[in-house]
Image (tube, rainbow, N blue to C red; front, side, top):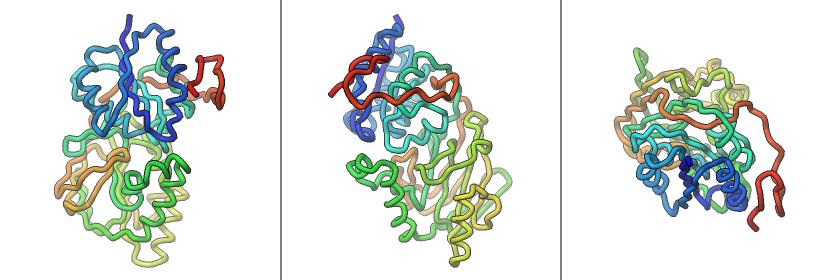
Length: 318
């Protein structure tokens, strides 16, 4: 019998996955898996559990937000064992899940774990620490780890936007030197992201045509500090219309390796989780790094019932 390790963060998002746990496990067992489940209790548990136990299993499944998925990916890579990864997104924004076309419903995503197809994706390295889809700094980036969890649970993605507005009003320009290939940039920036996703915090979105999540390249966006209201309006217009290359304040390009000189006190986020700053940073794309189970077609199943019994996947927990 095939073995499956499920690593779940029971506090992710609005805790909606908890109510469907019986249905999820019933589906996995009915699909022929011997399922072992571990609950994370603190930061880093997902990485440790995956690193220690990936080699004993035929698939590792993450249930939680993008931070939980990040930890599981990191652990699988640390294990040195090439094992497929399943992801049931249950966080607040689920940027990565949206980018790869996973179902927005818990049971729909669970179905893709057992009936989907394997697809390779790149992974990033930030001075050796892995990230799944984005490394960012500046406006909006601190929002993801500073917004209280109860506020995220209460109003969802709106919590990021509300806190992000305050973030922009208080942001101080950060002086950076950026080198990639033959190109060198230097200036004062209010935001930067090195990403492998079409969505960043549900606030900044990239065109799907601009993003290939398995091409060995990142999409890089740097926003210079506006000098006046005209610059600010230009930035806002470019972001809302996705016309990044038409704004002088925005640099947007693709690269597989980026070197950055920055203030050591400048914080970063990796997949929405806090990362301490460093003076010299090397961000590299690890091509073809993981195998992820995704739907064969991007078709959205019907939404689960709010309570009672789900006839497709079993009982719901109260």
